[in-house]
Amino acid sequence: MSASADFTHTTVLLSETVEGVLNDPAGIYVDGTFGRGGHSRLLLQKLEPAGRLIAIDRDPEAIAAATTGDARVTDPRFSICHAGFADMQQQLAGLGVTQVQGVLLDLGVSSPQIDNPARGFSFRFSGPLDMRMDTTRGESAADFLARADERQIAEVIRNYGEERFAAQIAKALVARREGGGAVRSTDELSKVVAGAVKTREPGQDPATRTFQALRIHVNAELEELEQGLKAALALLAPGGRLAVISFHSLEDRIVKNFITAHSKEEFDRRAPFAAPKPLALKALARIKPSAAEIKANPRSRSAVLRVAERTDAALPEPTAPRRAGRVR
Image 1: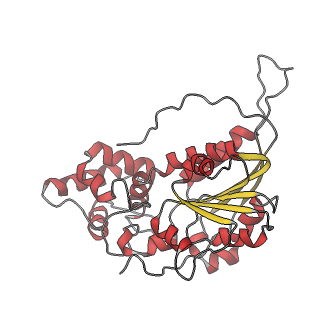
Image 2: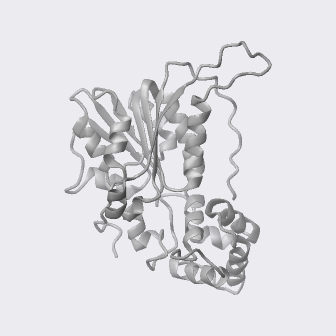
Image 3: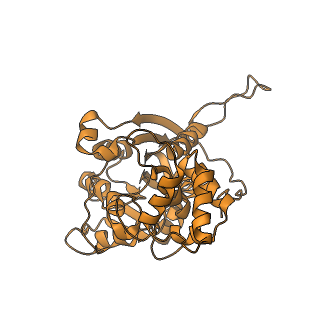
């Protein structure tokens, strides 16, 4: 099946996210995960003529969807950048923008990516084991499994898939590779995992957690999220909104902890009468899809939307970045 085929996507928590992020119809907004443009298109409908929307996506097919063909966005208030949202500050600086009224992020993998066998994201389809969101760069899942040692593979599957059979899966993958048959397709990976995973929750494919883990690793999704949240906070004007949709606990934990760290008052026990430190964010909402939305779009069932608002408090001085703990 062609990678350029028209794969549909139903936007999750569409109105809730746009309503959550929009607080000034004449402002500048960032959609850090354009996908197929569901949130962007609704946001453009609600912006005034003076408003502006800058979209970002690292998937070349998403960029093509926004710029070519019948579904392209022709609104002059819209522009799109081919990049990861962690680089939003640099991308916006190149457009002369240093402050925005809102940033929205719809995390994880989109339906067009999942449903296209050529992308290798799903165990439901036979295809090459790629899993890169940006197919123009980086290492595919197959390439990682072809060169990583057993410990590295096990750590990725355990840490990013929360898979209790990670060691057994890694051992089976390396044994297959040493036997001259390194996995290169989704089918091959599914079969190896099925042979190594002895029990699984009812209704869940044995390969679910392994596919999630490899996808997160290949795309450095958690590191991208941590950096993107910091960039968003630095860009938000006072009163500006941050809206983030997560789809699994690893993502949501990072978002929750980030908002909490910048919105929860902490008192110094050594100086109980001192004023609390200024807070950069105010947590506004945690929203789950309605029963009707889940029925219409089962893929929305695990989604969590968190919304926060930027205060007028100054941000603390940045500290030296710590080295990421990504397994290599």
